[in-house]
Length: 514
Image 1 (tube, rainbow, N blue to C red):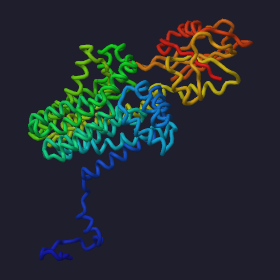
Image 2 (cartoon, rainbow, N blue to C red):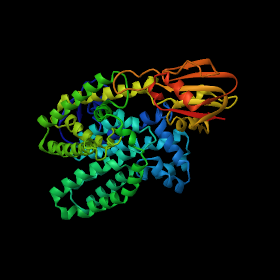
Image 3 (cartoon, rainbow, N blue to C red):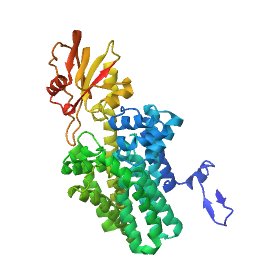
Image 4 (cartoon, rainbow, N blue to C red):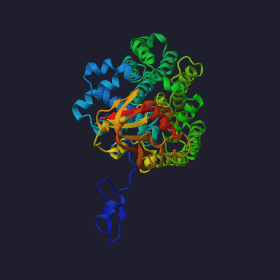
């Protein structure tokens, strides 16, 4: 039997017994998904990953401060911003509007950051695509599985929004280098303004971007867009000075700079917390170094140029705040504050993984790096000790009191506990007479190593006796009761809490629950 095709006179032999539709199937080969299809799939995966686990951990201290702030009226929120937060107003304005539409419950409250974090995935593709679509896909993949991007996509704070706007501004900057039109420069300036209005540290990405544009295009072409961003930055100076004077970031200087740098290395590679973190960090760093070697040795001229531009922005963005901290001019260096650095850093790594001549080496390195990241995300969700501070569990374990009681916890415990328990009153001086005193301690997470178990005092304050001790992976509660209403002092409670030798009691807070 012969089959004659209409497109020509060629005849093709066919098996007489072959099914009629099998010949058509022979011409149908499997096709590798296009970059656009891959990015859509990664975005969907990233959204599922973020939204499906959004309520696994309870709200923690910083999130509760944000929630209390946005519960105010709009003008009240803005007027309390300088005393409550250390960031510009854009995130709080947007999340305030978000809660008016979707509600202010913990799940709805966090969903804004989850959406922002999901949108960052295709934006990272756009940033990497300026070098090549293949590199763009790897940048999107890294954004999807990065433990740091995942963690802050589930936190009701400004960090995820800062990363989104910084990534969008970075992509616009890359485009402006290739197509230096007025429209592209204006887009870069507008997105940079949004980033700076979200977090002051976004300026550390803007500075090297502006300098590189000026060197290649000339200051005459970039003075207007650059000047617009600088004007907005100057307008924010009074607010930043007021927030600095309020001491909202003073705690950063109390920590070792070396420790903060070490913490940020871990943050950018394997995330905030997780098991076997030292081993995972070392392995991830080695894989990242391998990716950099790939782009240097196997990258095309265009790929190396794009990676070099991204590397300059990344180096300056991390070096400037480090320099300010080391010289004690303004020491506010913290991994979360410099999170926008991750954007050009990820593009450099993606440039190695997706280099045209990287071949299987790039795929193997990238696959191993993504596997480590997913393992750290899974561990942080499956092992309670590596989740956020479990104030929700503490509130549930304490339950509703039969009478007024005293709760002794870590400094600022009132903010997150009040979200789950209702109004609490901070007590100073003489403590009202009560029949129940509860000491609360959280497990202490460390940069390296397993979390320190929570420890609560077991020696009863004068006039009380130990009634019960509740202990979990994430918190511990010791409950003391008295036969009748007994008066105590804050000093005696602070001294009793000090017996626990727990970090969370370095500064105790005494609360009254009616």
